[in-house]
Amino acid sequence: MTQAERLLFLINYLLNEDDRLKSVDIPEDSAERKRLLRSLMNIRPPKPVSEDFLEVQDAYLQNECATKGIVKLSDIPMIQSGIYLWQGDITRLAADAIVNAANSALLGCFVPCHGCIDNAIHSAAGVGLRLECFDIMEKQKMGKIHSAEEPTGGAKITKAYNLPCRYVIHTVGPIIYGEVTQEDCGLLASCYRSCLELATANNLKSIAFCCISTGEFHFPNDKAAEIAVRTVQEYKEKNKNGLEVVFNVFKDKDYQIYRQLLG
Image 1 (cartoon, rainbow, N blue to C red):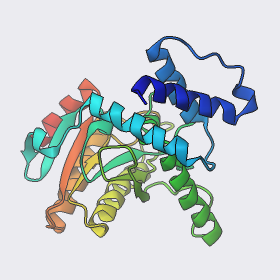
Image 2 (image 1 turned 45 degrees about the horizontal axis):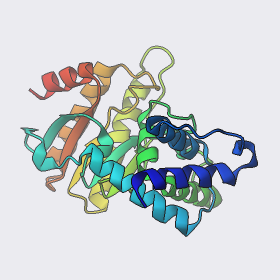
Image 3 (image 1 turned 180 degrees about the vertical axis):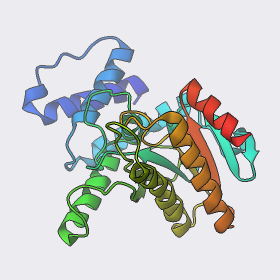
Image 4 (image 1 turned 120 degrees about the vertical axis):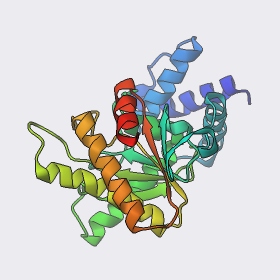
């Protein structure tokens, strides 16, 4: 199959899964078809899917990944010992793990083509990521370890599927409704520690952090960055295990904040 044929196959498969979607028109424009596929993947519930679909999906997404360009740690300048700063799309990073700023359901973003990092990561990984997250949450619910929601400050690790990294570590940051409290700051620091501990427990050599809680969760960017840098530096000082950390930013203002904090 060509990439265009894969795209059309995947769209038709997802449309035919749901009778409510069969009347949706498939656009002629390639960019619009890609947007439609992403939307269909975003709204798809975690349910079984055929091996044929997965085979075509994986080939399609891996081709898209290669087209975007894969970024390795060796491509990024080191700012401090074992600490890197990189501005760009986190789904291009070939670190051992990238961190996803997830919601408490831990199933990814269901809003079609939403601009959050949760949506970007699940869209680039493929439907298998949502299925694995669903299995994790079902086992958590059955074991009564927590409620049906992932607690703020914790973290879970999954495979990365069609991303260039090896794993995705999902963490739920605090949501800010007014003034930032000490509890909010403690929970955000817990997100970073939980991810670092999971990376160490799984013998990972590198981890890339997004700007947890600063987007839809409204944590002030400068304060969040201070907590992130301090928590990572304290962890690295206490645990001299050689774990390399990338602070991944997307916005110019976040790059300037981290650049100033890291020197």
